[in-house]
Image (cartoon, rainbow, N blue to C red; front, top):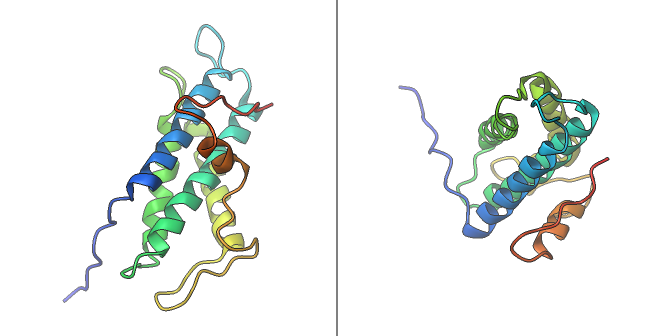
Length: 153
């Protein structure tokens, strides 16, 4: 009989809020990478936006899930795939984010390696220090309901 893991639990309200703010910032910033006829004219800028915000969004979710008593390391794979899919879906209408999928997956894998992963019994090991979320999450939390975006250039 095959052992099944419990499904990925819902995020806390705070973690959900943080992810939604990051997603909205990505969506708004990606608008600045296309022209009037919806062509992607600044792929380097789009890549910086996506990679930076993917890492921050993963950090929010990993921090939350790894704090749960029933944490399962396999959740990292599910979370990573869903986050990459979500980032691709944030591109403006008629503009495809698919060319960035491979780069985002590599970014996620590299980030997870750098960050370290928690085993089912142990703490999170990080080469960057405890619970470092970085500039964007600090920025988003300190901003009122409609954040001004950092300048992605």
